[in-house]
Image (cartoon, rainbow, N blue to C red; front, side, top):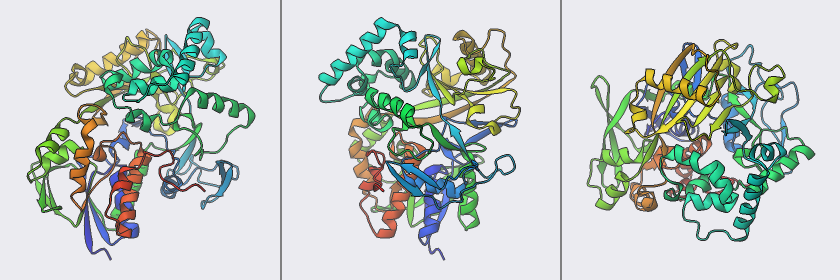
Length: 526
């Protein structure tokens, strides 16, 4: 029976994975403090009148076998009518410890769907392949002269790369050439972050884009022709090139709501709507968390160990001890980017392609990157294509319009009605919706501190990390907990590796901070 308490701040992927792993492998009983009324953090599913929204879009794909197996233990993969137990990757084959046939999503709810991936860029009022490739279609849309400039620029960058690679602009130029960077990367990236690419640390590209390049995109295109890929575990592919992924029937939050139910059934506690007010410290240890809810009720949570996925800036502010001046300076200088999703329900899209022109109601994209500089919208999700069960009436189109901003911007301060009007106007302006299209219904979701920024005082983050590591029973995990633009699977791995360390008596936290700094997530090759 558990004899010790683990207090976990945040009921997102990192926090819930930590709770699950602790209950499975240790004698710690988790107590989770969640500031919102939702389960899943940034990976929650928001329901609005029977229509479901995935905030940010979460493909369930990982190069980590550990994470893939974990997900499918929570929600099994749907029946595909074929033998799926053996899946090939990296030239080898591996047997799954799951049934060869899975549940039927038409009759069962607890199921992972196997979905086709399709994402494109929308630029010059046209759809381009993503990742961008020098295909005949791309050449035709860009023109011979522009394509030639891109090609020569790329060859120049290959011959004379920028060294040292200090910022994100240089990172892009070294991999794609200056011309392609200016055409497809610069304006969109600056729309997302609100600062010039020269002011963003190159490590953002190393974590989010990793080894992707034109050469890899070309090799991938050739491989598609020579040997069609049917497996979901493509560990040899860059994340941006995957063609299939798993997706819960009712969106990403379904996984985390299921995990929450499991840990609760084993005795864990989850306290929603409690915000951390203070963190009590004795020497080099955390001893308790003080939290308060919207009604003013205060609670004190004592523990033996503490996991934190809350923003580091807020964590440092909550510490009830003297914090060194340099640590405060770095913490206060950390910057974030906030996120607004406008859910819009319409009858159909004006935007068509070859497939939709042949009778299909919809283009097949999961989401579209809006590269157009004359609108604020950054990405467009088509929830029908993530899962048909995300939409109450499948004859309608359920869209997610994504906006990146700061909580001090005019955009963030707009009313819901103003944001809905802006979204509809912009979709009509760039040709996604017809001018006469009517919005059937709409809603607005705001998510603060969605993206930790790789600018501000980030270049001094090592000072902050050293201070956090000095508390032996404090374990930062997840995206905001480590101020790292991690995907969902990386956030989970930080929790898994932390619990590994606890079970093995390892006090050095370097391997946790190293998650997502290596291509294979520190997994051994099979």
